[in-house]
Image 1: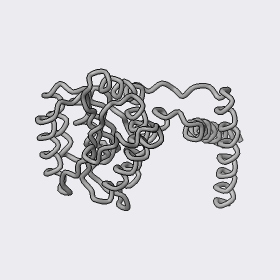
Image 2 (image 1 turned 180 degrees about the vertical axis):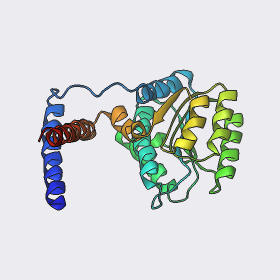
Image 3 (image 1 turned 30 degrees about the vertical axis):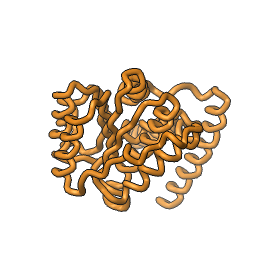
Length: 245
């Protein structure tokens, strides 16, 4: 019985996703609900381009293949769109990483973004800095980077621990506009006191779709919202049915 319900739910989700993707491409699916955090990301790139200063981006302290892979991929997905926006507007990006598995992925994302926009020669490997695998050392290295470089803002989306407070406070001291997203509730309390915009929980995973507005990603978010309402309605109907009958 459980397997049949799960299969039906999967088929319904797939059908709903296909329908919504067609509607998104036709411009008839409506808009995503407004979220202040993702809405600020294009402004961060635009501000860097206008000021002629680098925008610092971090995809977290975790790597690919561990327990925090989903959070790391959320940061990488967002970086892919930020890199496209930066290549178009000639806004310099400065990306720091703390895990060796992420380093070649970040380099490839930036290189492909410049190539897609006909500016392959503008890609500089020095835009990506491998700081340190130790989280505290990464925080110290990033703080030093904030002091040495003239930055326009700070975007951090991924897995972070207590070391975030050191980086966040350094950003506050430098007067940087900070957009930060992470999934750890313990770290979110630190983010709230230091970041201008916070991506909470699912907002972090949705940020890439909000930034890119790609039909597949937008349709996926809309399908998730629809499925949530369907589940809520099913629970309400089942509960009322048991109470009445």
